[in-house]
Length: 151
Picture 1: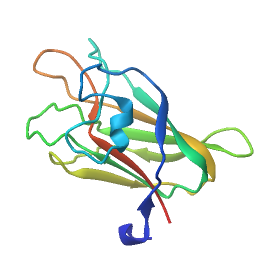
Picture 2: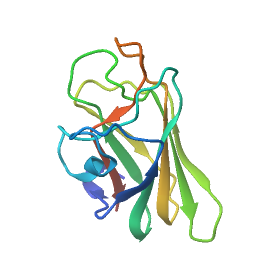
Picture 3: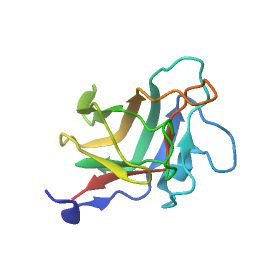
C-alpha cells in the first residue's frame, strides 16, 4: 500500500510515557498537533535507555504504518531514535509486536516511516532506543511529530 492510500488516524492521544521534559514545546500530546516545532522529549538521562509512549487510537482501528519526524535541527545528537518497536494490543487480548526497526537514519526534519503488521487494536506502545549522547553528556529522545496511518 502506498503512502497516498493511507491517512493519519485522528484523535490519537498519549495515555502514558516513560516521562517528558516539561518545557513549553515538549509535551507528549504535541506529537499530534501537526507542528514540526513542538513535540515530545524524554527526560535527560545519564545512561541511554529505551523510552516508550502508550497511544490510544480513539477506538478500534487497523493501523498499517507509523511515521515519526526528526527534529529539524542539523546537529548530530538531536535525540532521534535509531531503533523502534511498535506493540499492538489486539481486541482479543495479549500483545503483538507489529514493527521492529533498526539502524534508523533520518535527516534533520525528515520522517521515518515503518510498515505495521495489520492488527485491529485500540492502543499501541511505541518503544524507542539508541539515541546519541548530547554534547551536555546526557541522553534524551526527541520526536517532533508522530502519525499512525490507516487505509
